[in-house]
Length: 141
Image 1: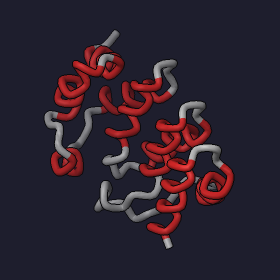
Image 2: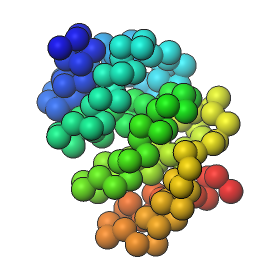
Image 3: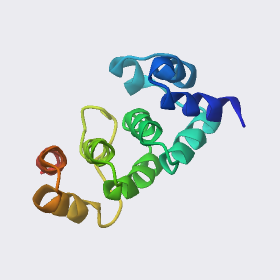
């Protein structure tokens, strides 16, 4: 396991999440995250964490990748709109619509994601996911 993968696994323990965030990005504030440039190893470990079995890890990986203006991050986050855990879906919807978190982002989404957000906004069983998806859509129009 690489050091970056170990840090991502640290997201599973709430008590070490901020230490993991600091280790991966060098800081913990949203202002810092908006300017950070992830190493290739950190980016890869975060993307790998998106597919892991632990919802807290998936949530934190989205949280970090939300601030990365790299189209690969958005493509990696998009499948989590179908996550079985509502708070993970909600965070994915936020990440796919929030231009504040990614000021340098031009706003392009992977194919089919705007339609998926619209479906979540109307049909998701969680009211929080529906609201976040609707907000994500409104930020893009």
